[in-house]
Length: 138
Image (tube, rainbow, N blue to C red; front, side, top):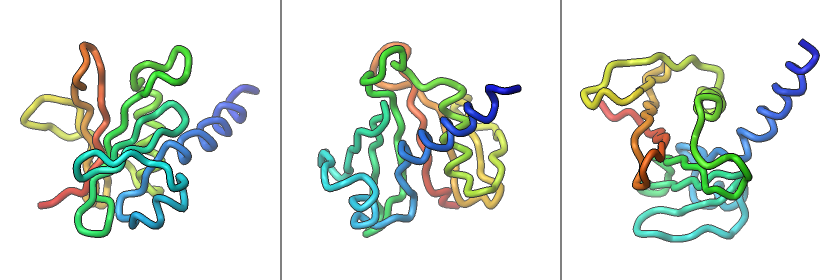
């Protein structure tokens, strides 16, 4: 039980730093992450705390985040269940995420206010997992 507060502190410090914000403007993202980001197509890619976070925009606001492990942290080569729970907790803004059925059969969660949806999908590399968090357009 003594390790739990330390674990929660580490999670609280690491997860927000790895999180791009859906709804943020480019200026807000640059304030959070600094000016360095790679422009790839219509997205910006940030490297932060062992994650590569690709942010796609709808107009002036971030509408989708794609989280992958970038291999920069030893032993952290793929997104784990622990990573997923941390990212969803931070994206939840105090709201719960509920598992939902998806046509693809991939693990999918819907935030309680139904504003955001998250899906764990295969990446481009064998055995790579990618967590996609996006606006839930109905």
